[in-house]
Amino acid sequence: MLPSERLELAIYQAIKRVPGQRFDTSLPMLSQITGETDHGALAERLKDLEDDGQILLSKYSGGQIWPRGDSPDRTFFNAGSFFIEIAPRGRKYFEELEQRAEQEARKTAASPAEPLIFVSCGQSTPAERKLGQEIAKLVEKETGYRAYFAENQNTLEGVTENILKRLHTAVGFIAIMHPRGNVSNPNSASGPATGLFMRWGLMDRVFMGTPSTPRAVSSP
Image (tube, rainbow, N blue to C red):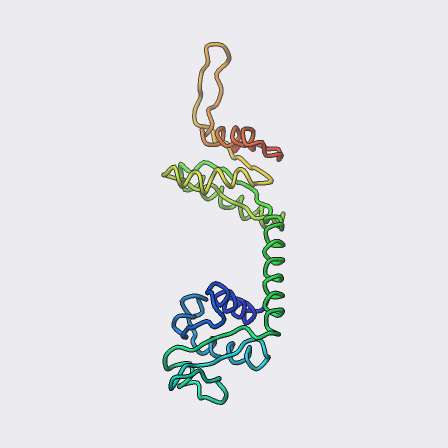
């Protein structure tokens, strides 16, 4: 839909919410309801809708209601309130706008999200952070997918919103596991320790049931 059509639909929905045949309003009120801050644009849409036979504009003056006719904008739109009515031929036009808006909303909801590759890398040093950033850039350059480099998060909300949700929707997971010294186990040989976050990320991929296959890449 064109921006002008969206504004016309917003005007219609404002009229429809108020019981009665005539909608008593003003440009400041319409601006608040529709979100259109340009009063000139609102007046332009109203005049075009009336010229096309979609609405009727009138004003109460001298004890009776007068049609807009050739009234100057400054006296009709900018001096007090006025009435808007849906013209007989206008209802079909507005219902078609509503239908198109609903179709666009359904189409947007059904569209698959842009594929995301989750990049997890140690950030203990500037070099490690730079490595993660460079890998993210390389992913976007070579695959065309969007890369998300998991920056440090210091709050539970940050982890939930910026880490877990992206892990759940990612189509791929790249973990750069930096050596963190050696760990020993009484039941097995000692080996290099790696970042806890990488292991947590890999476990989350399994726990959330996302079908992509994670691959771990060890740094030198």
